Image 1: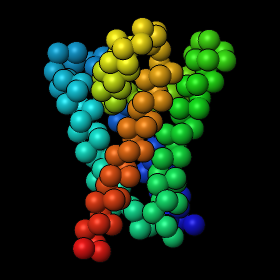
Image 2: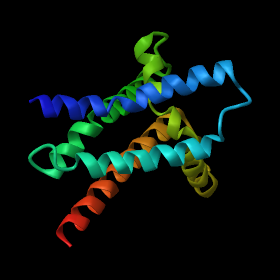
Image 3: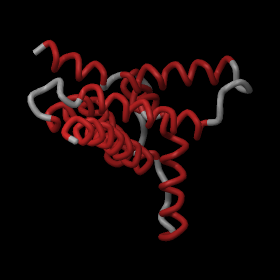
Length: 153
């Protein structure tokens, strides 16, 4: 049970990174590394998380679900606020959903922008949140795959 709670808490790390990035950007606007670099470093970090936590729960799938559960909750809140409400809540929950994916916003915007160029659809924070969630799940899976493949080779 403690291991599962630990996996869930590891999944909240992006929120802490996003809050830190936001406060850093507000205080030191010209000293922040490029956002693409932050996104790439975050994805590498999430691959590393996938590699070290893959075997904590009974199966790699359960570990992946527990670690990415906060990301799923956040993307569902983004979808609810963006699609159903048409606005973001002006409270902690509305802000937290935006901070959670802040490390990946530049990379996700590039991916969504590429599809926008192909289809002509409009871009919203909902699509960026969904792409960010998929990037996190894919990165975690890549890390767990690399660890599992390396262990059994």
